[in-house]
Image (cartoon, rainbow, N blue to C red; front, side, top):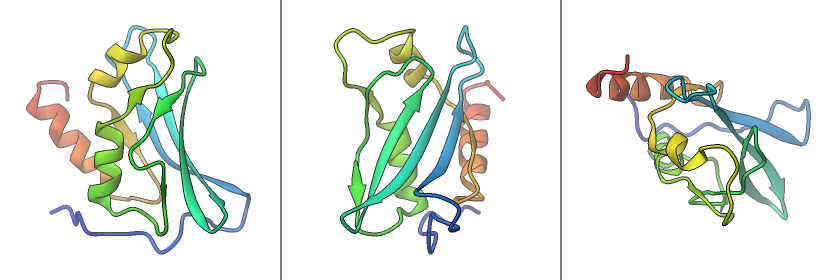
Length: 124
């Protein structure tokens, strides 16, 4: 059972100013696209940023938070990502429509949610 209320105590281990929260891989993409979601702290708030290979601007909801996100909140962030720029590079809109494979040290059971979802759609 996935604990959707689980919230990490921290995203940082003291090794740098930013932390990789989630690595998303889209194996059905023609190019095997990846999107990484990072967190930094600015003015006491966690700031979230998604980065893809092409440098597209990706809208996240939420963009910032006063505390680490719960599993439910990080799932919502991942599933509602949208492209901000008017002329996106690559096929980012199609990629975002897919269901990613997920890796995360901060959210140990997050991959299970997306594995089950991929299986439901015949992708696993």
